[in-house]
Image (tube, rainbow, N blue to C red; front, side, top):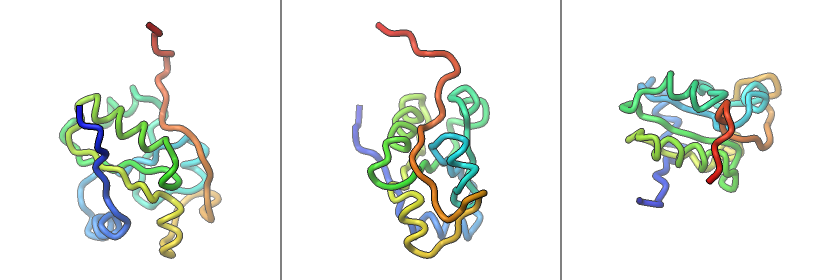
Length: 128
């Protein structure tokens, strides 16, 4: 298994959004975090089951959360890759990097957002 996380930087992400490229930009935080502030064009999935229904294994996918230290997008990246999604990258800078560049956010409190977790399974995973 390759442990390297493939990434995308802010300017490449911005260019993809401006061109209208066909890709899924997933905010990997709780619903309340998504409602508060997210990068325009983002989607949010509440459960892995919902994500599995909505995503195709051929989709280009970019995941992000708040900043480079936020583990939610790392978890999302790993889950997607382990589930067989072939074209996944992480925007590690997240909301903090996006706003530092002066780019707009959408949401109820789009001046900023804090931590949260990637969508969770609706049933707890079996231990063992």
